[in-house]
Image (cartoon, rainbow, N blue to C red):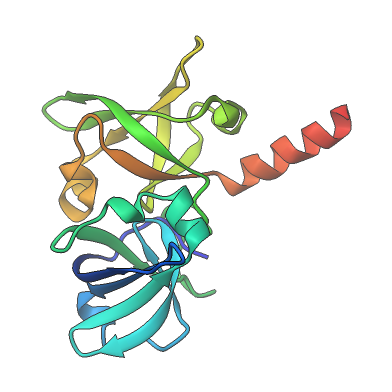
Length: 202
C-alpha cells in the first residue's frame, strides 16, 4: 500500500525489453538504493514494482506483460525521471490517500492551464471509468495523490486536477505536456462501491 506522497525523483539508467513483452528497468532511486531489500515493493510512477536486483547506484525491477500493457512504462526512456515512493508502514502518517500501485488505465493529457499559483491539468480516460470519479474525490496520476477539481458532463470523459507549487517542484508532473500519457489509479473505495452497486443491479 502507498500514500501517493512522492518521496523522491528517480532516474532511469537502463531499459531492457524481453521477447515475452516484459521489461527489466534499472533506476537510480537515490536514498533507497542501498536501504531497500530484495522483494520489496516500491511505487515507480504509480506502478507497484518489486525490487529484483540491488546495487549501490540503482535498483532493478521487472515489469511483466500485463503491467506493460496497462501502463505507460514502455514509453519511458533512459535518463527520464520517475516518481518514487516506498510502501507505507502501519506507523506512517497518511498525507495523501491509500493507493495500491495497481494501475487501472492510462490517461492522456488534453489541456493545461497556468496561473500564478498553480497549474490545472485535464486528463482524458476511457469512458468505462466514468463511474469511478467524483468531484473532490481522490485520484492518483503517475503515483501522485491528487484531488479531482472538475469533471466532464458530456460524452467526453475527462477530469481536472490542480497542481500546487509543491507538487510541481517535487514530482514529474511539471514535465507533462498535452498529448502525454499518464498512469491513472482510481480511488479504491470508489471501486468497491461501484462493484457493489453493479452486483445489486444484476
